[in-house]
Image (cartoon, rainbow, N blue to C red; front, side):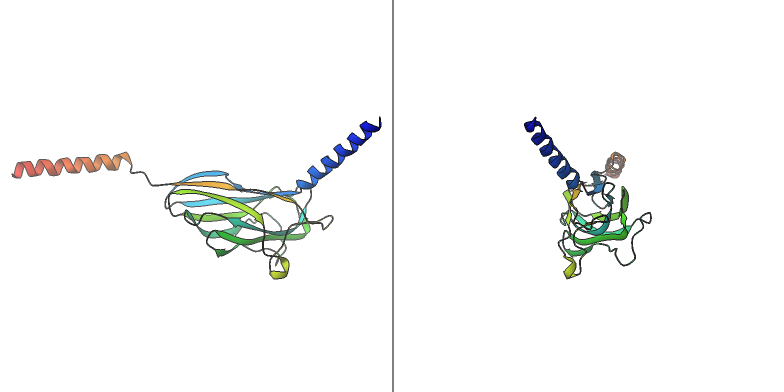
Amino acid sequence: MRKSLVLLAIGLLVGLGAVQAQAGSFALLPPTQEVMVGDTVTLGVTMDFSTDPTVGGGLDIFYDPAVLSYQDFVFATELNFDFGFTGAPVLVSPGVLQNLYIGNFSGLAGPALVGTLTFSADAMGTSLLTMADSALAAADGGAGPFYSAATFAEQVVDYTGAEVNVNVVPIPGSVLLLGSGLVGLVGVRRRRSG
């Protein structure tokens, strides 16, 4: 009986730890894209703090600058952000967007679209896009980590990134057919004039 109670207590503690570990999440959508060199790449930044609404915080986004170049971030209009506690990420070095921050002292829950990232596909290759808690602390002008609207305790956030595969632009079959036809006509014309 005593052993059963100990196991039950351990199970409850592990279960509570798992719930706390899932306080909130961010994801980039779609998780995988196939694009051509020169295309525009658009990714939605989504959040979900359904189990523990957040007053806000900040995150950083990382990507391969040899494949993609950052263009813009636009906030979604559906969320009720507090004025002055929302900021688009800043390109601090190639491949690093720092301190995308959101907040509302009444709490943000989700799931919801935070906004849209736009990149241009510059070269062939694969770019993994990842996210992490903002490295810029509140004392340094950043938003810092995410905090619970209920307890004001720091929240553990799960980040799910994306993958963008950039390929070279294929030459359409019709262009090849047109080109071979033109070469054939030039050859016929030279033959007749010679």
